[in-house]
Image (cartoon, rainbow over all chains, first blue to last red; front, top):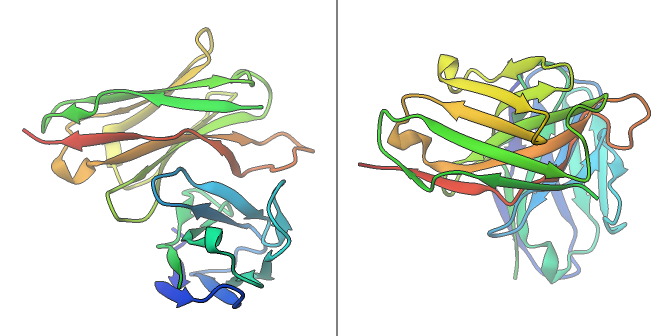
Length: 107
Length: 125
């Protein structure tokens, strides 16, 4: 089973700052990673798929990168509405799995 | 536009069986490439993938619930159903279902692109 480890567990940043979230896979998964955003009390929403493609309607300040075992979600300039927990998920093989999440707080 | 809605009990007793139903609109579950996943989230914790069924009735399961979980599909009602036997307080969670499209050429191929709002299930006597 592939384990996804996200870091940091949480971060607190001010509006306009850059957020860098990491997701590391326990084995190489090519570009088979997605990122989801989950705001408080809401269902997750697909943000980035295939490591670097933004889903429809996702602002350009969100970007994904990486391949193999190391992946990054970057928010170039944080907005107050970006306060959420962000999860990575792989689809490389069964079983699927999610990372433990990174909570982003906007000061 | 795809909409997804889960329904089921909010409270179950330990050892009972949980049945959660997921109803889809805007997509036919019997269409080529369409799949349904179940994911749960214990209070304050991370997402956990549980199970998946595709248009060909192929099923995949996580090891989290072992042999206690079954996923089925009812095409006539355009629904997917998750069944978990022998429920335990540790199974208290919000249970989500989500749409996945596996067909070649799909925009978000292989990803959970539409989610229900989730249903919170508490296991307590």
